Amino acid sequence: MDHIRYSELSSLFSRSTADLVYVSCFPDRSVIRRFLPDLAWETEVWLASEPTHMIHLNGEKFLGPYHH
Image (tube, rainbow, N blue to C red; front, side, top):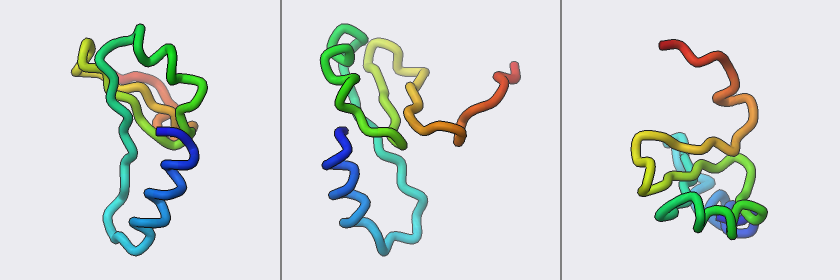
């Protein structure tokens, strides 16, 4: 999801009372490499090849130590 689409969706759902999460989905890392420069900050990425993890492009919201 690029910054233009992020802005469009943010505007569309501006009256929503739910906390929104914007997720782009890709089959694997080789495909995301082509799109990574265009992905918007404040979004997430999910890879089908690694379904139990997500890539967070949203600064300090998830910044912190990993607890086992």
